[in-house]
Structures are given as C-alpha cells and as structure tokens.
Image 1 (cartoon, one colour):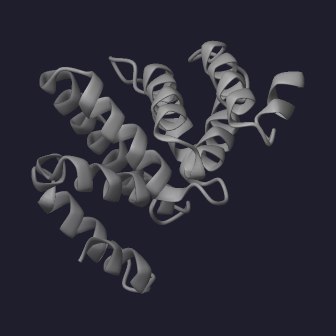
Image 2: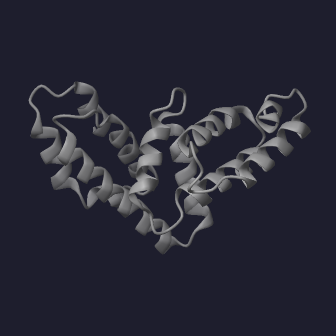
Length: 174
C-alpha cells in the first residue's frame, strides 16, 4: 500500500522508484494480477520512456511468459476490460514482447493468442460478451497480421454467426 501511494507522487524520481519496486514484485500467480497490470498500464500513459519500458517489460515477463496458458489469456481479457486500458494498453505489451523475445517465440505467442481468442469467440459468441477477445484479436492483428490471416475463414464464419450482431464487431475488423 505504501509503494502504490508513491506511484502518484509529484516527484518523478519517487514515482520511478515506486514503479520499479511494484514491477519487481509481479508474478504470474499474483493475486489480482489483471487489476494490478491494468492499473500500471493506466498510470504509465504519461510517464517517461524509461518508466514505460520498465513497466511494459515487467508486464511482458509475467503476462506473456512462454508457453501461453489459459490463465494468461484470461488475464489479458480482464485487462482489456478495465476502464481506460482497452486494446491500446495491451498492444504496448505485445510490442514489448516482440522487442524482447526471439521472433519465433513472438510468432508462437501471437498465434496461440489468436487460436485461444477464436476458440472462445466461436464457443461463446451467442451467450457471452466476446468484445474483450475481439480487442485482443485486433491488437494481435496490428502487431502480427499473419496470425489473423491464417484464420480468415473462422473470422468470416464468426461475423456471419449472428444476423443481429452489433455493427461495432464488424467495423472492428474492416
């Protein structure tokens, strides 16, 4: 609690130290990881490049540690659902993943997320809000378009699934 209070300090040096301490305690099994990650993504929006890279590197390390799991995908869904984070925040984590990992690990991660997302969309599109998955797919497409192109038939099938589907879901992919 004391460290999180320092994330709002007026001194950039104090904030930078608080971000470093917070990031050093992040673990993939941390309770409330998605909420913590979303909070950090909101807070770094207007921070210096050094702070942003520290936080994004730590989030990449805990959120996208290979091999990706269902828990990873659920954390990402929870993060994009937080107010003021959305797809842009997760895209920055994906870009950091691309810069820190080998190209084969990055490609495998993006393809795994795409498969998980399409699986969830196809299974749950009639009964559950799949917009967080759509946001994740959108961000994957922005950093690694080939991951989506391989699944074009699935995407077309999903878009045709529900004749009453919101136009927002369709516009997202156009």
